[in-house]
Image 1 (cartoon, rainbow, N blue to C red):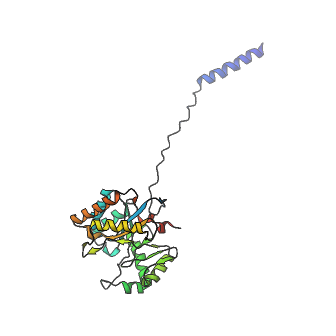
Image 2: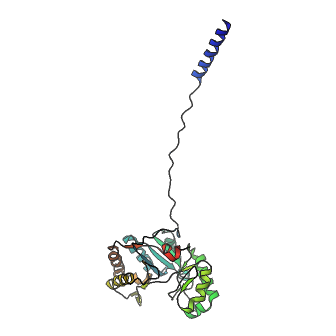
Length: 274
């Protein structure tokens, strides 16, 4: 009898304890929000062999209003472009802001290295002497990278259509030593396939002439990289409204061809090649 009472007593105690205890709330997992990392200059992409890649590359930035006007046209047209900057052109707070705007506009725009001095010696462009002094020329590019905080190792040589990367060098003999040294430091030197030339400070070719140059070059297959076309021009040529309009029309016509894709130079095959 005592055993039964004891058992009943224990059951009663356990039941009361269970009634008085608070239930453990279920574990609630917070929803995980995955935020994609912002693309960084130099992040590789896969190119589509069925497309024609166009690289708009504008030299001698900052040259406002040409730089800001060109940026506005590219933005309005929804295309990417690369601006090659010159450190000695960054004079005063406004030009500094222009350079900052280029640096911070990736992936729409890419800022690359066009030397600090633009090969100026005693105030004038002196390409032959600049490249002859290979040591000081390399220092000039390194200075520009540091002063302007250029985030990619992409260089265009002032006044010369030279290419270099991973030991592959093409260009005039006068730039060979500078190309070798920059290549050994891991830089990619990018020239151009066609140029929108200048007549003093305005574009030389018409829109139709430039479109023809683009299509002819692609159709001939004679570009530095297959299915890729690097177009060189200069910021200052498009400062006036009528020439900004020409630039806009040029891009509009090219966009009508579904094969054409506009990219920045960090997505050029020579640059992405390991």
